[in-house]
Amino acid sequence: MSDLKRYHMIQECINVLRKKRKVNYFEIGVQTGFCFFKIKADKKVAIDPNFIIKPTKKIRAYIKNLSNFNNRFFELTSDDFFAQQKDYIKKIGGIDVIFVDGLHLFEQTYLDIVNALQYLNKDGVILIHDCNPLTLAASIRAYTSEEAARIAPAGWANIWNGDVWKSIAKLRSEREDLEIMVFNTDHGMGMVRPGKPEAMLHYTDEQIEALSYNDLDADREKILNLKDPATFTGFIKKFAATL
Ligand SMILES: C[S@@+](CC[C@H](N)C(=O)[O-])C[C@H]1O[C@@H](n2cnc3c(N)ncnc32)[C@H](O)[C@@H]1O
Image (cartoon, rainbow, N blue to C red; front, side):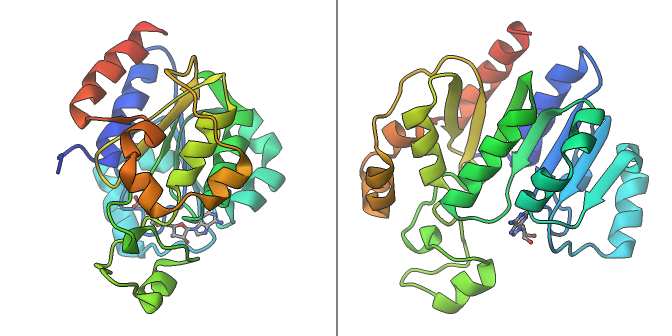
């Protein structure tokens, strides 16, 4: 397993843009702030209906990373955030980098990405966690990790990615204006940004619904446009060169 983690990848994307200007970072699904507090950006926006952030952890995080002093927290679902905070998102200059890691159901992840695209600056990037489940048990549909653990399907190992992967298959089937890939690290880090697709998929909505974990397992390279994590450095160079 690669050592390349979500927070390294998010930070590298931010650093590229930060050479040009100030950068806004958004995170959907923040929980304890494990990832969110590490990130350095000019403005950071946290969205979660149920933050679990201990005050002591918050204080430590602020001392360690001064960019936390520019944080805004919205204790809302992502749908409510996008419905209620349109003016705020525009006022702060739109979205530069967003990490989608909220409800791990494919239709919600798809909606989070589509909503984020409305405010994404043209050189912005959307990163998505949990795009590459490695077992059937990890890909189970549930509303929370606790629910997934209660169902405890055969092979359950306390890893829950849900069926987020289908949002990648759907977007790759319908959007000719987006570059989409998944880096094979940290449960599968999806990347979506304005640009030309390397290749399209041709699934209908009905076919996406019907896809199973076995279908993914049989063809994950093609369905996800799965990339070796070693190629992330090349991606960052290309990203920087296109600015
Ligand atoms: C896996 S955790 C996030 C972990 C965090 N991004 C990290 O890397 O440390 C998922 C979070 O998504 C939140 N969540 C669930 N439904 C959501 C929704 N509809 N909108 C936004 N966040 C949601 C949960 O409350 C939970 O805190």
